[in-house]
Image (tube, rainbow, N blue to C red):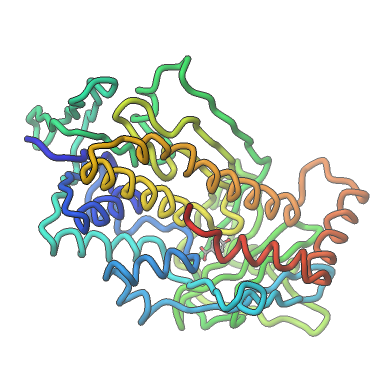
Length: 391
Ligand code: DHB
């Protein structure tokens, strides 16, 4: 089998890349070790930057997002028992975020790909790369018990944070940068109407918490926890008591309780792999970088990567020149590091660290006060939150 671009991974990066290439008349095959049902039901974050929304709309994949997603023009920072609104739209010349779950974006992309004749091979195993430093790389894998091979011009490694693809880049040609945070997020899905019209990022001495939403009757809530804790230690009553302790304000509680139907703990780390390309292999999305969830940059960064990558690949097929393609890592990493810094900064400002003393606590509150009282500081948060332009 031959295709122009072999794509490993049917997450947001791989699927969107495949669709963007299709719109440029470039063929691709997407390989995925999980099933379609698995990728369409994995619970992830739900905040789309303005640029992500605009792109999905432009390429004809935004119809359901426009109908079912929630546009938020502001966000609340809550600390010292009081809420403060950051007016995202006012501070960014009219931009906003849209709350729409990542697995819904995945469903829309899979549908769009299949409707336009795209090839996604689900449930494959033993995927390996060959000859990425030559002119005709190959991807080998097993499908339905049979060994198969795809010959291609380029390989896109979009295989997520545990990427097999990136291990094909020789050790002396790569660098990795990382931070592991000493806390995780306990996430729940709740059958209840929204507690707030906008997202709430709350700082509290007991730890961070976040109020988000999914629909008119499903809410998404998170609170900082020990990353090694188990969901079995958290009864519904204990979860609600913890959320109230962290979120109730002087005016009382606005938290709408309901049936909790999903619980999970996510670890938090920052990770960047450089460069994002080697020979004919290009990494995109979590395969090249991971952010802690605060600020929900993960999917949006993947979108930025594949926009730059698809332009480089399209440029190659149009002109025969690799110039734009060879600049991919350099261009993508600028945006990646901006989001890495923003996610680390939000995480550091809002979470309680295990060894945190009263001095550090005061510094966090002072920084939060600066963000809500200084238009310059609020603009910095707002610009990053709604998303930097794709380079
Ligand atoms: C959500 C996740 C985030 O990491 C965040 O910063 C905001 C919202 C969410 O899942 O809704």
